[in-house]
Length: 296
Ligand code: R5P
Image (tube, rainbow, N blue to C red):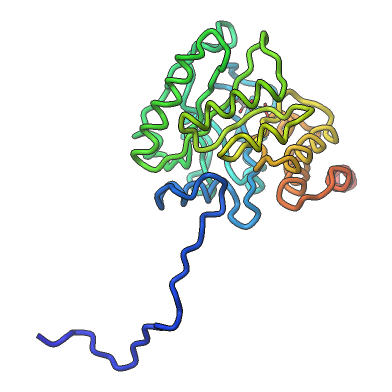
């Protein structure tokens, strides 16, 4: 039977070898295509870094300052976030489905701020994460806490479910009040998350020796912002973390509680994606505020 497609001008470029390029992200080369594609919606493939905007605080503390009206205060920030970390409730009720970047869904929860915080359980099915086109799910891990084993089990179950469908898992190292936040603790917590299958890990920036935390963790680390501090200090923290091996920030209060959140997230981007010095990013931040004031 003759071939339907018999054009003479075919060119198979036999002299050009097909390239086999390694995936850009630390520790992620052996994942399947779907997982890598989702990770590329969290981490910018050009810079290898991410500015995740964390707005999931309501999952245990309700209408957090700055998040009382997400439709009013957070939607203007979406254009500057590489990824949103949030609950499925806020995603469905407020975030436009045209948002083009990665979604990281809060997938653990249970106790509120009024109760024992570490007693969390898995709070969503992986099917719903798929329905919402999530790039990753996030789970709190309380190493050294009263519910350590339970929270680790939450994470490993999510890793199994995520691997089934190519959804990444963000292990969030949660430090109880009784534990010391230092590099020794963070090394332990991050490494346990990675060893047990987290695709990437969120932790706090600590001094000294943060570079030993990132070096001993075989998957990317992003840092949480923590409670609100002066804007220049937050930019310094982000800068130091990136210089010491972090792959980005998962920042909430230090962006949405800033005097000017739109300017702040842009300043954070300068530090994370362009390696700008914190002073320069802060200068941009102040100038943006002054310009805005002039217009008013
Ligand atoms: C806390 O567990 C929440 O998941 C937040 O997403 C996280 O703490 C990051 O937000 P912030 O920068 O406000 O600390």
